[in-house]
Amino acid sequence: MIRLLLADDQHLIRGAIASLLNLEPDLEVVAQVGRGDEVAAAVAEHRPDVVVLDIEMPGADGLSVAESLPGQAVVILTSFGRPGYLRRAMAAGVRGFVPKDAPVEQLAAAVRKVHTGGRYLDPELAASAMMAGECPLTERERDALGLAARGASVSEIAVSLRLTEGTVRNYLSNAIMKLGASNRISAIRAAQEMGWI
Image (cartoon, rainbow, N blue to C red; front, side):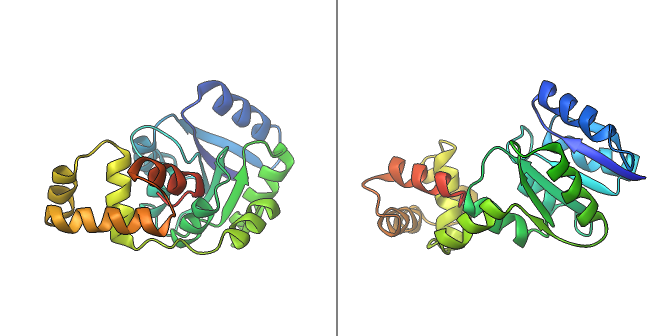
């Protein structure tokens, strides 16, 4: 029996996915959580074989949670098929990436493959990621733009990243230019659509 932990902030969807996975003869959902910051404690308590994470959750996003679980078999289940998310997930050690609109059989197949040490990438998401190319932003540009996306001012970003305000402005300007955007808001939107921040 493959023991699963399911993390998704949408209660109805989480319950439906759990019910469908529990119908599989070799799968058992042993724990469910609705927040990213609840996953580590649930993993420690229930010792699942595979953790299935949504990307967008309160408390901590699924990619951050995956990074905090080194060595844990993780499948990302998301309605956001952004190419940058797939690249970030792979860099975090995630071994499975499945869209939420996939049939439950596809999710079950991904869980089984990841459990045996393999990788499962949805073919459409993999093709999109390959066509999108690499993120043109540096890590610091992504950090600054990500904080700006959460509403942080230049001075707040500077304090958070331990930089001068002038350096932060340079990073934000570079990001705007690299993304071909006209301003910070459109740069944020473009980076979010690609899953780069």
